[in-house]
Image (cartoon, rainbow, N blue to C red):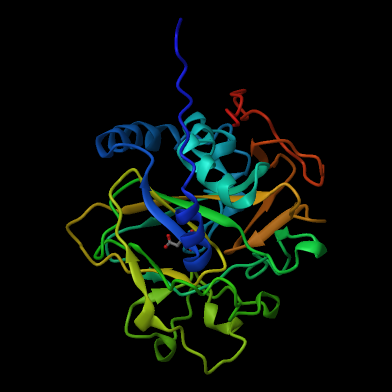
Length: 315
Ligand SMILES: O=C(O)CCC(=O)C(=O)O
């Protein structure tokens, strides 16, 4: 008789408790380093072909960053497998419950010489577009935000732009996303820059501070140094940032973020397009992906296969 071994990557109750206390879990391994390097060498070339991408590149690409790299899991088989990877989904469901959607993915590239990402927290993700992108139900009001699983596709070191977290900050929002920010990629206001060279992709996140005189408690910041193939899971409402890429002789650092919510959350409510970072994408071909469980709410448009016909391997 063949014995089937059911592997599970669920965190222990102690790890889950730590996640609730600190707002993050990891880093943990998703791929071996050489496997990640091999995969990425192949996939970066495949992803250059946007024939089946859900967003039109011309509309999405503008300014010094772009939203064209959103949601490539909807056309790439590797990324479709990645967002459903058991090493990720088992950890996400341990926190969000059995029925979970992946509603967004994003690449975060940093090239040698690039500034770091400024300190921020995200609750409804209305900060740039002015419209909430995720809304938790009224009865779950104490919650908000999304679980992000950020995977290092290349090395994320102190000098190549690793993430930074301020643990335990995920229950209090220091920013008001409804204040709105202006996209001003050419405006460099040195007087607002701190000791570390950081920015927010053409916005100044400090415009959203509830108290303009407040400063992030950076003395409590920790660095998430990660090898290629490692991932970290965190609440988007936890204060997070990244360091500049200051090592001119090193490769670019590339993070890939998958964002997850339980099925009770409404994704892009009453929204047909997303207008941010100087670009605009239409949601006509968009769908959230059920990566685990069942959706008894039916709030959200979903897709079960990529635009190339590959079925998402949901848990
Ligand atoms: O990779 C970065 O620099 C920022 C990532 C981030 O803010 C996020 O994944 O939410």
